[in-house]
Length: 115
Length: 113
Image 1 (cartoon, rainbow over the protein chains, first blue to last red):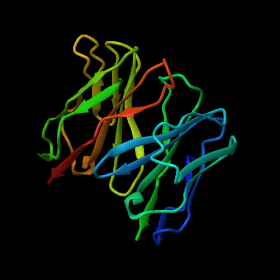
Image 2: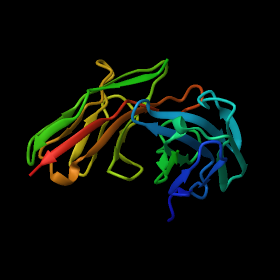
Image 3: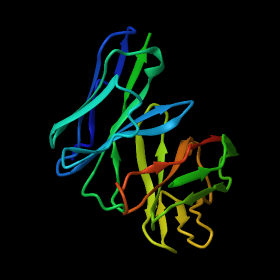
Image 4: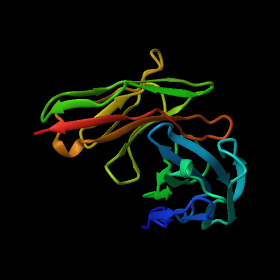
């Protein structure tokens, strides 16, 4: 079975440009998470969707960040305009139902560099 | 709030040494506990988990026991290999609220031949 699929794997962009990261969760999973990983802050939860509805977006750093989940098989995380401090690895993850004991599966990450 | 505290790294060991990485937690509800591993340049993979007190999770020679009385979930392996070099994350999830996964800061393990 395919795991969580993220694209692009690597992106280098100039400050001020729009960045769109994409995620396809595991088929049948109804919870989706976006995490950001940096050396300084470790792993931070940005936003959590359940059944395509944003449940907790308290981790979204500011208005430049937005996330959507138009259907059960696709989500995007957009940064506009991007800044150098947004450079990080962005992980998408998914889980089958909302039980806390169920495993969350991670994609391989999108490695973003903003210059 | 819910939180996880891990020992600072890096942990540097020789091959075949015994490994312990400490993890303690604070949770408002009754959490499930996880260890995830991240190899260089890769995403996080579930290593093991435990969903109730006294459960022992195990995988690939690693194990951890859910200790409610000490709010701990320490990771152990009897004999580490060079290929175990990675970053290890302890995490929890509770059934109240949004059931989101809360991570510790990660502990880097370096195993030398």
